[in-house]
Amino acid sequence: MPYLKRTEVDLYYELAGQGAPVLWIQGVGVCGECWRPQVSGLESRFQSLLFDNRGMGKSLPCRGPINIEAMADDARALMDAAGWGSAHVVGHSMGGVIAQQLALDCPNRVRSLSLLCTFARGKEGGRLTLWTLWMGLRTRLGTRRMRRRAFLEMLLPEQHLAKENEAELADRIGRLVGRDLADQPQVLMKQVSALAAHDCSPRLRELASIPTLVVSAVHDPIALPRYGRMLADAIPGARYELLQDASHGLTIQHAERVNQMLGKFLETVEIAGATKVL
Image 1: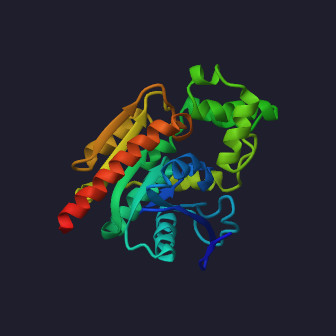
Image 2: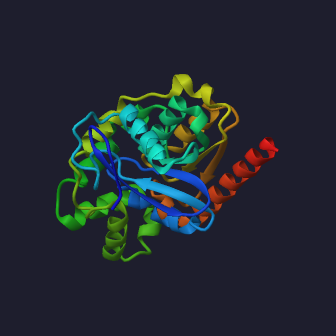
Image 3: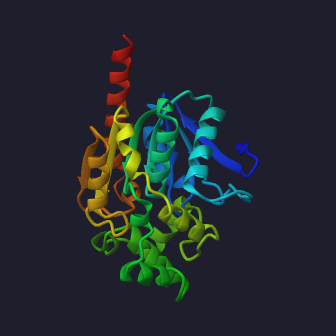
């Protein structure tokens, strides 16, 4: 298993596929393996790098801070390790905030940004409401089945859950997330705090030269569609897409649709870049 040894943490990562480079960044409480539907679906056209954020999954133990800046620097270091001068960067939820920070830190190394179910202001994702408090409690209290159910409700629309075998679905998504859905990783609350403390919004106009796609989901209870719309509006030239019948787990529920959207966007950016060179 490949690891990048850093002073504060050994980062677990994986390279797969062939073609233009794509760096995939995941969100709170989720391992890089959750990008598998995208990595596998696009491997004939793109080389992917997926990884576990510091303090998560196989990137343990972490001896340094858990904050967005540090995680963005981890992402940059992984690009160095892969020998990539630049890459397309895709981020989901907190991963989208990390992706924004990486682009602000190293704009010349980001070919494009794809920001899924995310926000400009981390406090929007880390906000406390009656719903978030209730769901947070449900993922920690009750039977293991009840805790798994609560996690599934954060990812998928109710009408979708009603059509699925709940136990089989929890097992399948658990393998992608990197843990039994009834359990919470120790780093989770540190990640939530890091997200809530970060705000890229004052600098987003600096990303005007980077082709950007922002995607929201109609039923997302975490990254509300209006947050995605605000993010797209703040980045000059950004394209905004709103997926129907989708929630925070759209990369799992609608993997094929997401892959088609991302594949077309990334290929368009590649063609435009090649045309500029000519």
